[in-house]
Image 1 (cartoon, rainbow, N blue to C red):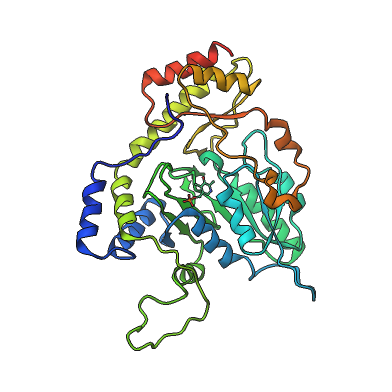
Image 2: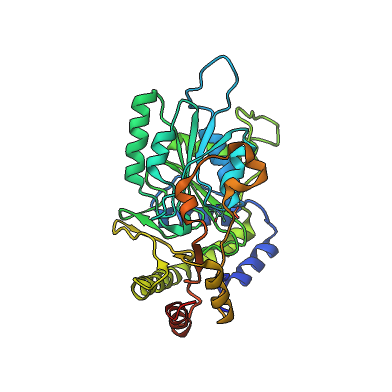
Length: 377
Ligand SMILES: *Cc1c(COP(=O)(O)O)cnc(C)c1O
C-alpha cells in the first residue's frame, strides 16, 4: 500500500539521541537552544520558542493573545469567542475550549480549503478574542488580504483582534517569498511524528514582537525565569505559565531531521506539480487553487471527487491509501452548541479526499496514482 504519510527520520538521529541520553541532561537543555537557533535562522525570525507539541504551542499562543484584547467590555463576564475553521485537525480548536472561550465557526473556501475570508470579515464582532487560521495541508492563507480585514475591523471596533496561524502542516511553506512566521501574527508549527519536519513530538511558537516573545518564553515554563536564582528562592512569578518546553532528546531528533528536510520538501512540491498537470481536467476530479504568490508544503494532496466512496475503494484496490484526515470539527458532540450554517463546507464535504504526495513516492508510484485516477472509478 502506498501510504498517505511516512515518518522522515535522519539516519543520524539515533546517535544524536544516544548522546543526549548519555550526557544526562534530558529535558530542556542546550540542544533545545541549538534547535531554536537553527529554526530561527531557517524562518528568518529570531522570536521563537520550542515546545513539546504543536497543541501546547496553540494553548500558549491563545493564552498570550486572547484576554488582553477584546471589546466585550460590559459588566457581565463574556469570555469572548474565537473565529475558527472546522476543516482542520481537532488540535487546532480544542485549545479554544480549554481557555473557556466560545468557538464561532467560519466557513471554508471551497477553492483553497482554508478559511473563507469573506465570511471571516462578516463574523468579526466586539466579542472576537482571536482569529485562528490554519494553513491546511500547508497551503498558505492569503495573509495580506487577512491583514486588510483585520485593519478594517480595528477601525470599526476600536481594537485589533489578534491572529494565530496554525502552521502545523506547513513547514517550508512561504507567502510572498517569506516563510510563515513573518507576517505579523503569532504562529505555531508542529513537529509531530508524521509532520514533514519531525522531532517525534514537538512544536514551535513564532512571535511577531519582542514583548510577546518574552512572555511566551516565561509562560512556557510556569512563568519562571530560567535564569532566576532558585537556589535562594529569590524569584517571583508575575504571570503563571504552563509546563510546555521541548526536551533535549526531541531537539536532537529535530536537529538531525532539519538537515534532511529541504530535499524532501522539494519532492513534495515536484510530486504536487506533477499531479497539478496530469490530473487537470480529468472527469470527476476537481483541483484546489494555486496562487503564484505562495509556495505550499503539500503535506498531503487534496482532491474534490465525485462519488468519493467508489474513488477510495478503487484506489485501495490498487494499493493507494487515501484518507479524510479528520472529521469536520463542527460536527463533534463537544461543540454542539456552536453549530451554524456553513454552506461552503457543506458543498464540498462529501467530495474532499487526500492522496499521497510526499517524498516517499517513487516515480512509478506517482505514475501509478495518476493512471489509476485517470482510468476512472
Ligand atoms: C498536527 C496538527 C496539530 C497538532 O500538533 P501536535 O504537534 O500533534 O500537537 C494541530 N493542528 C494541525 C492542523 C495539525 O495538523
